Structures are given as C-alpha cells and as structure tokens.
Image (cartoon, rainbow, N blue to C red):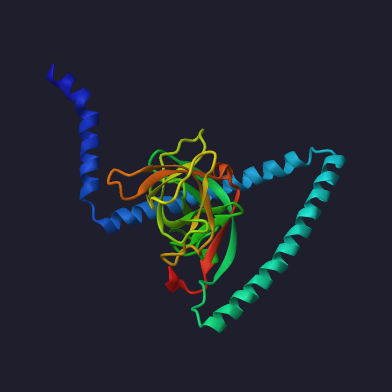
Length: 278
C-alpha cells in the first residue's frame, strides 16, 4: 500500500525538488539560463515571421490586374500626401529651432526612426508584449519608445542580438505620464487587464476635478513629455469616462485605445541620439 502511495506522489516530489533547486540558484545563473533559452528560441520566432510574410506575398499574387492597378493608384495618392507632410514637418522643425534659439530654450529630445517588423505577439492577463525583428544589430536600447501611425505602441523592455521585446501600452505593467490635449496638468496612465477579443483599454489616475469626459464627449489623451522618454504630444487614446476617486481629490477613469494595437505588423522605434536620455 505504501509503495503505491509513494508512486502517486513521486511526480509532485520531483516537481517540488526542481522548484526548490531553481529558487536556490543564484540570480546570475537564472538570467544566463533565460537569455540562453531566448537566444535559442528567437531564430524560430523570426523564421516563422518570415514564412508568414512569404505566405502573404504569394497570396497577393492571386489578385487580379485590375485590383493591383487600383491599389497602385491609391498608393500613389498616399505617397503624394506623405511627401507634402514631410515638407510641412521640415518647416515646423525649422520654426521650432528658430524659437528655441530666440527664447534660449533647451532642445527637445532628438531621435532617429528605426522601423521594425512584428515577429510575434504574446498576450496574457499579466502582460501584453510584441517581439520585433530588430535588436542590438540595429542599435536599439532598452527603454526606447515604440510608436506607430496612431500614436504610442509601448516601450522596449528587452533587447537581444536580432530581436527586441516591446511592453505594450495595453499591458498592466506599462505606466506613462500624460496630459489631456490642450491642458498641461499631468495625469498618470496605466494599461489595463485586456483580453484578446475585446477592444484595448487603459486607465487614468490623478485626473484634476475640472476635467470631464463621457462616451459622447471623450477627451484626447497625449504624452506629456515628462520623464524624458516619450516626446510630448503623442496620441495615447481617448478618456471615455471619469469618476471621483476614493479620496475625492482627483478622478479616475477609462481610456479607449486604438483598435489597431491588437493587429500591428509594423512599428517604429524612436532611438535617442543621446543614449543618456533614457
């Protein structure tokens, strides 16, 4: 009877011993083991991403010539619009530089833009992350902001030789100093508990009492520039409702984020020209 009971509990004993050994291992050994595992896994993730790109390429070859011609015309119009936007951007940059010199203001953080392809998505109840196909080989540092056409995507939290991990703005571990567009009072933004099949959302805290927002009249939330990581004015989302906090001194509320965050294929990393800014 005793040997049979021991056979039933032996797997749990082995598991307990393994967990105990892992807890007693030095932090250096754990970090090295995790980095080695990621280095082994990363080529498979990147290879799978390239295979998906190849599948998309061949599926696009099945479109008719009329569809391709129409897509080409639409693309030409979009390129013309972007060329005009680039000219406007250069003029605005020159005006900002003139005002900085005139008012003797410190220069705004300077970045170079590094586009990157999304290789994998890792969504769970505890974190929401992306793996991109660029890392140390393109000079991407930990802490660099990640953006897309709709605003903030997240922040680089891990960098490896050929890949990097992005902590998404939807993740509960993500925090950011923000402001309501047109207002300079700081607000604290944090990601929420998001699921794979629902619209992405976040939360705000320490909202001043004189700010109001409803689903019919939302308030646009942007980066404040405080902290020196994200430049000011980048779109975060829209505050859809606000309620008084428990202490009655501020308000808390929900933020509706861009729906495209759950299906991104391309992002841009803002790599600071001065690494000390991170």
